[in-house]
Amino acid sequence: MYTIRRGQKDDIPAVFELINELAVYERAPEQVTNTVAMMEEDGFGKHPVYGFFVAERADTGKIIGTAIYYYRYSTWKGKRLYLEDYIVTESERGKGAGKLLFERVMMQCLEDGCTGMMWQVLDWNEPAIHFYKKYNSEFDSGWINCHLQAEDIERMLDRE
Image (cartoon, rainbow, N blue to C red):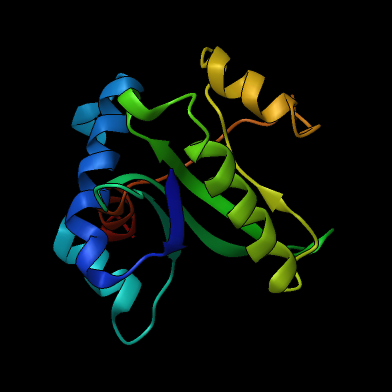
């Protein structure tokens, strides 16, 4: 019913649609400032910083899901695969595409010699939490996510 394959540059517009769908689901569509052009450069330019897989419906070839990942380094654990976003369009959820995508990312983790993989899930996203529990995932507590936006960094550094 589904084909899982490595993402290609031509897939980015469809993947970007899924990203926007996820942003709406996560109640933050205004937070998406990425663009198709940025994704093309960041994934297929001189120094790619992420990889991705897509799930296609076997009967239509339509992309209905994606898993976007990159690598990070833990001083305690070593090389880790970070699953940045994992998206299946709403009408295809619960039909097996998500399982195939997630397991392909797990295989990539092992193929690349990573010590494990990591990701985040919103505390209110019960369907996702339930899915991850099926894989005996560990859920951290006590960690707070932090970030700075580029414009804030520029403003702060200009004060010196």
